Image 1 (tube, rainbow, N blue to C red):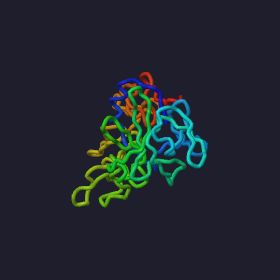
Image 2 (image 1 turned 180 degrees about the vertical axis):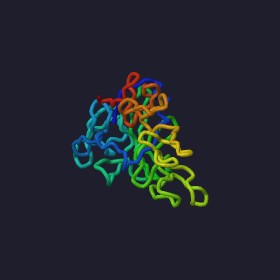
Image 3 (image 1 turned 120 degrees about the vertical axis):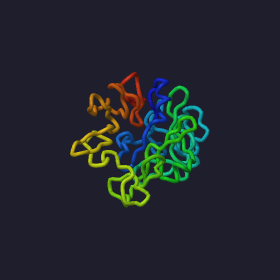
Image 4 (image 1 turned 60 degrees about the vertical axis):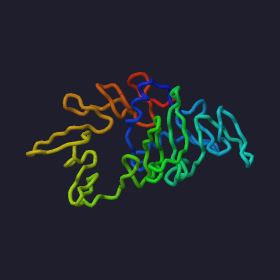
Length: 251
């Protein structure tokens, strides 16, 4: 999986990315391409988007064809490191084999690098794809069983209500609400809203929109966070190119 080189300020905002449900938000279109046996498609790696995931590729420092113990040739790419892969039951893809999680990071040249790492705060909560920035790990795609930071929150309906994110200590009232449900159902692009004295108002926009002149205005395509129409953070696995375009490296 590879991406375009991007500006240095992109490094500074990667740690701010959010967390996604694999079941609800996994972008299957990114991984639609099929690869030969023993290879997996990784958006953004260079020059070929298919790379070997077998342990024969351990220690690869250059693009090279190696032969596994069963005599099968496989293309090893240095942008894919650490090979504790296991199949995912909900897709045709291989992610990290427990207790490992598929992790992506960026090298000093802005090239994406994929690895599998044992990070208990991720793997113990069902994280499928995580990101590493310096020594900070954040889950980017959770499994079917969790969501939120490090996938530590459950999809089970809270006892205090179906639209509650967390409950108060008595489990009787909402302590916080799901996005778009605070405290009543918000309008389509609103993240946090309220109705006081029958008057509706909102204070935040959902991801992909920014607040301009009292309205939630759509950000550029594949952009998660923008400011005055300029994209600041792209949705994974897109990266910022120039000032306002989210692309994959192979674009």
